[in-house]
Image 1 (cartoon, rainbow, N blue to C red):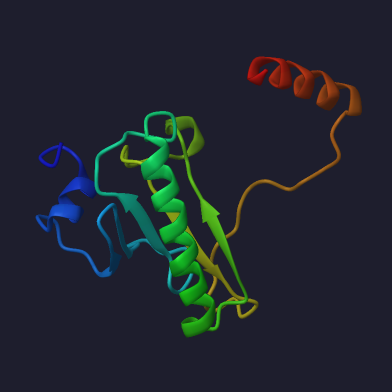
Image 2 (cartoon, rainbow, N blue to C red):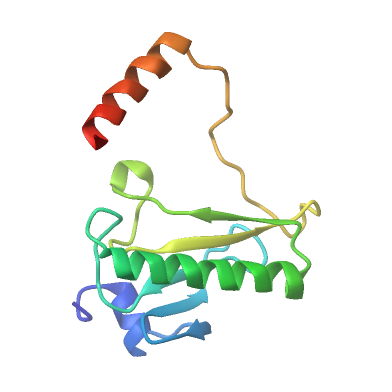
Length: 141
């Protein structure tokens, strides 16, 4: 998959990156289009297209690696918080089809933090929430 996938190329070293951390299963590197100072990506070394395709073992390893680098971002960069973001599918803003978690340090100092999201939470319809929750609960059974 390395010939076709940008992140596989980064993992193998064929594509340059600023590496932050690596273990047997995961690779963390700086995002070249950062939403905030210290924004990085954590990927599984084994190619998986998205959240639906990644193995449970690789997902757990990526999540634990993301937690480790998020703690470092707070400790070392003085971040005030962290967002973990995964986009699954083109309509959900996924642009590289190799599973990845964005670790986005957040700062009250907006000169370090350029991230804005288009979603503004507003209360939902209680009946719709209950109906959809019931359907999902039954499906997960």
